Image 1 (cartoon, one colour):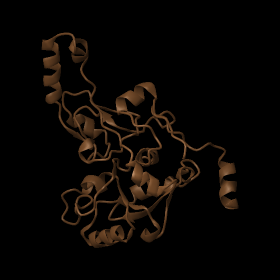
Image 2 (cartoon, one colour; image 1 turned 45 degrees about the vertical axis):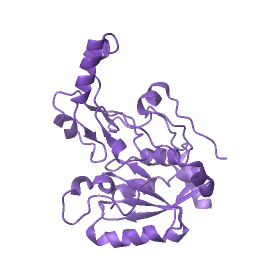
Image 3 (cartoon, rainbow, N blue to C red; image 1 turned 120 degrees about the vertical axis):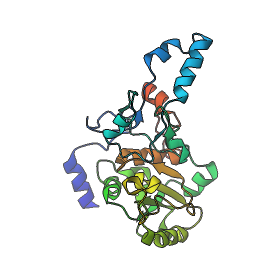
Length: 271
């Protein structure tokens, strides 16, 4: 405890805040990929039936962006030919379903809170067992950063533990190698009910850069239900923390667009 306090005092910085605008992140940070609506559509949308039909037609012809497969590389924007695609500073991308990561313009439905009964059972704390099931180590490094004095997820009652029998759920990182499938499933079964599963990173969601390899499953197997999908390669610690807080009902629900424009993400105090 004293070592922690000394390190905290030496750092002389407050823990990172959850700013919807992404302020404070380095300029090179690449967050949610978006495809802005053309100005012509903005001008005509809602003005005439013909304008609305044209806007809807263009939206239907937009390519589908899979944030669950994205590694957030600059080359990805070049593949969207004819679209003004760009990475934003918005780190909030965690969703409750895999399908929510599929989008034509980058707007997604952020993770919704667990039901009230589940949150009552969890109480004010959340303990996870991390399972590295065949990854490069990048996601594990970002998850480890969540416990340092900058992000300090323990202030929200969230911690990693050594045993699945002491955990409320598991956090999965990696493309799930064939040799790790049994270990992953046994770890999941060792967690007492009710349990939470969080898939972190492109590899755990879709296989990432290893997708298609015969050595990996290409993401979490169907035998393990996932409650929270956190995209990224690797995800920023704030992306993971934001998703977990939304899962616990500690952040008020909002869409990407509305929150970014109004800053209406509100941190709910512990009850």
